[in-house]
Amino acid sequence: MSLIDRYLTRTIAVPLLGTLILAAMLLVLDKMLRLFDFVVNAGGPVSVVWRMLANLLPEYFALGIPIGLMLGILLAFRKLALSSELDALRGIGVGYGRLLRIPYIYAFALMALNLLIVAYLQPIAHYRYEGLRFDLRSGALGASIKVGEFNRMGKRLTLRIDQSRDNGTRLEGIFVQVDDASGGSVAATAQGGRFLATDDSQVILFRLRNGRLVQQSPKFPAPRTLTFASYDLPIPIPAIDPFRSRGTDYEELYLDELFRLGYGGAASGEEQRLGAQANLHFRLVEVFMMLMLPMLAVALAVPPKRSSSSLGIFIGIVMVVAYHKVNQYGEQAGAQGRIDPIIALWGPFLLLAVLIGWMYHVIAHRPGGQPIATLEWAAARAGRWVRGLLPRSRQT
Image (cartoon, rainbow, N blue to C red):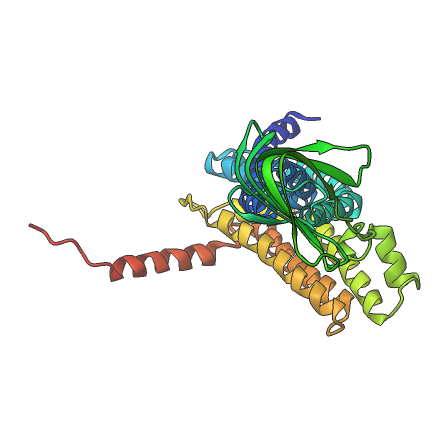
């Protein structure tokens, strides 16, 4: 590896890794607050938030890797351009094609990693994430009892606790009611109590102390009451339905499974075939789009002479995010049969490739060419127009 290649490798690596980590962390922090709120409202343990976030990381990296690659190369070449190092390299005969060798090594390596993520890691992580959501709603992860509120646990158990001490091992001010299938019920109030495990995994024991119990049944002419110092109330644990099998959602299918459904004749109907095709092409265009990012980054990195504007960074981010949103719309349109999935997803890809190819041709092969010069001029004119609208400060 030549000195130029080693220098470019170091120059690109720092902003690339920093941007990738920053983008992933921003997405995680945005989701973390909503997950905490969801888990607390569902009454589940807070520790499950970290498991849910871990299963979201493949999805966030699949989006963050292209942005990190584009910004890493863009910031590196922008640094070279602003410090006149790029002019020096071109002055000794090093063209843009030669300078893109290292960016494309990064691009191919990250494209292979992103393909692995969207093909296998993201589907299984998505399925596990949905499984955790299901377990939270069903109570399979263990439900926390909200103090001072009536808690409905299962179909036949109502519980209220006034105070909880020693991490839930001492409960005070208890009301509990258990209904049975025959129309009867057992209601009890107690000064205190605690939960105990039994040999039967489907039954827990609620040991109450200093309270009163009322039992009602259609067989009794009048309710039966009982005052007790200690009473063991068996409580059946409600049965929980198993989580669905993987593959109900196209996001949970591997690439080879999507291909068999979309083109291998394994689909059960036209709707499933189109949905599989749309999701397959959506994942592929998101990955292959990374081949165009080095040229896009170089075209946007070099500002016009005597300018240090960062407009290219903004345009690059907007283009990558907007293209992702266009692909999402194309996937929906292809799955619904309104547009052929190939046209809906590869059409925008070809248009973007032509635009990026033109931008790179202008910067690399036209003397003094600047693909964003017009946008720089328009942004400067807009800035002057806005400043002209602002009231001038009065001179005293």
